[in-house]
Image (tube, rainbow, N blue to C red; front, side, top):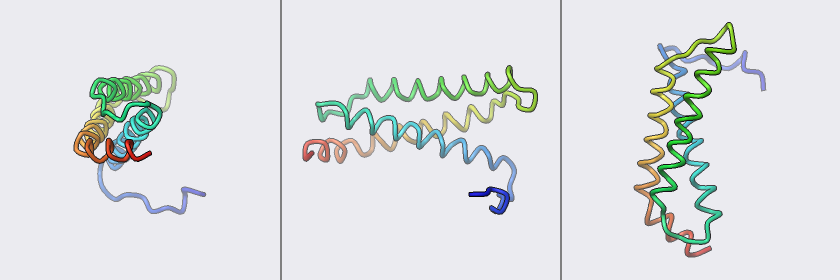
Length: 108
């Protein structure tokens, strides 16, 4: 799929929205994978915290790498903030769906 023909967002910092959704999806998928692999059906807040922390560390690492090892990219604190916003939104969604996730897991 060629991205040159796609419409471009018409507002400032549109890439921050993408960062937010990307890290929301990363955190959610990572947790759902973990949750599906564990034999217990209990939502583990500790595992969720570790996944959120690792997702945030990954986002910070990527920002540092692109700032240090490329000449055409720079470190952007707003990207990190957008990443963390997406992670927090995923965290809140997972906690709000705790009962449903545990019920689904028991049925499997």
